[in-house]
Length: 74
Image (cartoon, rainbow, N blue to C red; front, side, top):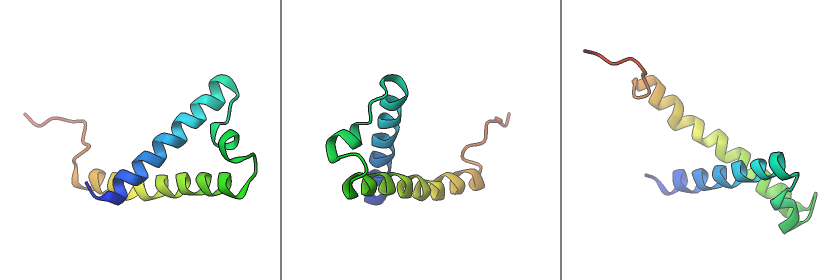
């Protein structure tokens, strides 16, 4: 797996866990660590969003190649 894919997946996991904390406990870990509305918090949010957009490329490639097909050929 390319290093960029590992990095973007890690950032998506961080974002997902952060949203889970927000939903369950109303606790934003990124804002707590870096300051609510700070430039660093915003950078983390932007990187998580960009990572999700980047991960669309392998997803769409897998769909196009039939790799994610749910039907099984007999």
